[in-house]
Amino acid sequence: MLRICFLDAKTLGSDANLSGLAEFGDISIYNTTKSEDVIDRIKDQDIVITNKVVLNESNLKPALNLKLICVAATGTNNIDLGYAKSRGIAVTNVAGYSTQSVAQHTFAMLFYLLESLKYYDEYVKSMDYSKSDVFTHLEKPFTELYGKTWGIIGLGTIGGTVACIARAFGCRVVYYSTSGMNNNGEYERVELDKLMEVSDIVSIHAPLNDRTRNLIDYRCLQSMKKSAILINLGRGGIVNENDLAKALDEDLIMGAALDVLESEPIKPSNPLLALKKREKLIITPHIAWASVEARRRLINELNLNIKAFLNNEVRNRVD
Image 1 (tube, rainbow, N blue to C red):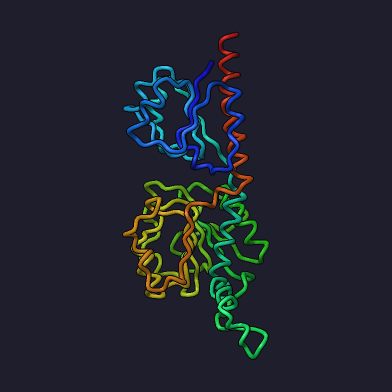
Image 2 (image 1 turned 90 degrees about the vertical axis):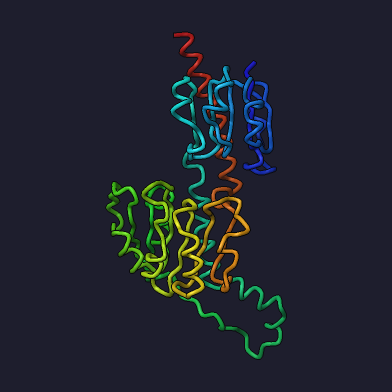
């Protein structure tokens, strides 16, 4: 019987149904795994599932039976792919499962800021509205998306979905290709400087690499409209957090929404936690990917990846 372990199942939520994994063998499920425990937990396993636990040469070397690493995410930067290949260890990931979830969260964060929803909710619940002499309250005026320019950094599958929704709201969509290789004929491709200057909303849906690290710095933020909103649902590290904190406190832009940070969980020393103008920023704890449906798709794809690998092994043995 195959031995399988999931090193950080807690990252998929307490409501995740992992029972399907049992059909493949003897399954050990760990909520979290510290780096010092990795070797002991994987050394006798045939299949290892990980979301964010790092697997490298030092901890993979003693795992002599290991045949397959399943990454419970799209990114594989936590896996030493070169070493895995040298050992003949297959590595699979899951792509495309969270597109709708991330696109939805993009707009949820935008509207929270654009329409000052926190302020208005607190205005009513504080009983101030009940004392009003008029039926409405317009202390925080908001604008419509219709007719605005939406700039997208990283027009991949998620960025393309956001672009489609933004267009449905009546936005003009422009995009910047971080790789320089995306030529989507549906939307206008522009250089980064122009995108930052003309956009009313800028949303980031790009990976973190040498081209995108600290891509959005103080100079970029200075070039934005004072009424603009910046949204990062790509990767932490693309936006320089020190520069963003400074820009928000100086009112260079209207607001920012972040679902990803350079260090996760957030460090107490992060400058964004010390903003003077806290109402200009919303931060969520890397949840955009994690709708109930997205997590179900992810688990289903994990099962399919294992099944496909095992079927392939059977075919190899038969052939």
